[in-house]
Image 1: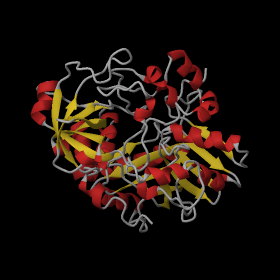
Image 2 (image 1 turned 180 degrees about the vertical axis):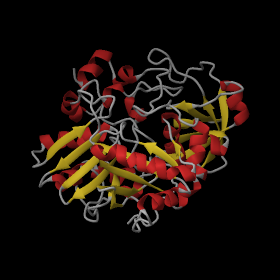
Image 3 (image 1 turned 90 degrees about the horizontal axis):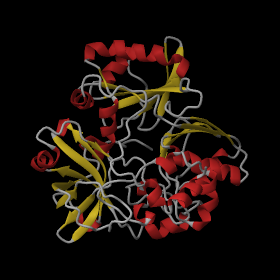
Length: 443
């Protein structure tokens, strides 16, 4: 059954996707907590942490004489200055300029790439590669939850992050690694195993992501864990890991804008129903019967710096117009602690919520939340959100409507008696390091 079949059977994309109260996603094959989510969050702020990212990533390996040509045709990124040994966020958009979803693209060789992340971007690239007759091959490695036949990942990914990360790394490798800019990598060796050290940190703190063949995974992990003992290394569980993107300002998995355009009907028939596009749920107090009310452009996600209009690609003309018509600004909402306790209980514990909750002011709807989570280092629950530009100034007071709209058959703006949580608008990324230094020396 394909995605278009699912839409037709449900009656609309929103009816297919609307699942009130759906459980929040957490990484596959990772314990929820090791030292407790609070201690794990504090580790990347105050000490050093280790996150195992090996199992939840979806990887596509793209190779062939037309690999760069294909990627340049389906994304808004610049490839002329994209050197081997670098990584970047890929920004694919539809013909109308709305984002499909982002992903992390690594250039392994002149015509060889690895695309990692939510598979909606991989699907978009592969479809156009096959339909366009590009001389390129694709191979994939799904996340451990969905890998056919089970088995191990092809790659390990271990992220070491925090103020003490550099000291731990120097201890493991017997000295400092070569100077490496953000989202660049350097080859490293440990006990005869060679792999990559990517300068990257999900929450904006100093750190590396070590990536290599799964056959070497246990050796590398054991070395990192042993070297980390004197530094108080803390392993990060699935709960704490999901919160890093909230403070770093990355909105994971925006709704792919592929459900409504008539000219994408063939693409929807190519996509399986039981894939990310057919199964990633919509829910929260914000509801619309029109799936296009959930679409966003790269500019509205804060990705304008990644858009390069100096080449021809799908959606280029629409993006030229979209940059002059930005409807939403990305912000962080800091929820009022008293209201959080009033609505969620005196001890709300760990809060993780991907619901699209309504954000309101006295004049009505001001935007929606995207990712809400407890952040113990800030003693707050914060929500990465999109709001109308006139409400985006730091210090603006808003309220979050906390509840689950039942969906079709109930008016989108019906007063369902949901409680309100007061919140204050702050910048995104909320983490100061991520906001001011995260991408220094990236070029």
